[in-house]
Length: 100
Image 1 (spheres, rainbow, N blue to C red):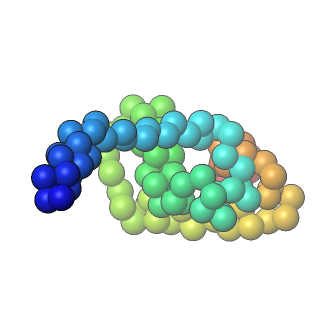
Image 2 (cartoon, rainbow, N blue to C red):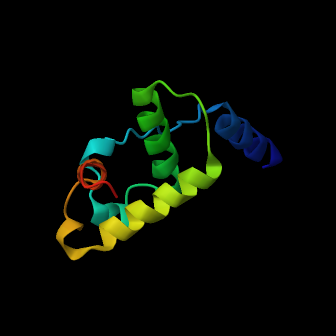
């Protein structure tokens, strides 16, 4: 009986572990999804967005305080009723065009 348990244990240990890798298309995340944490943690999205826009400007600097300020601005823009179904990137572009 103990031998069977040992064989079963080794069988489970020998099984390859499957690591799920999820790809998220940032351009399709709406404000509603962003605020509801339904795609990813907004903090992770904010970090990605910061890197994306810094990369577009050719900047390699990280400014944690500015990252937090921009995250709060994005959250405020997403909370506006007319932006809830818009993609986050579109809301950012719209806010940048308005100088917010």
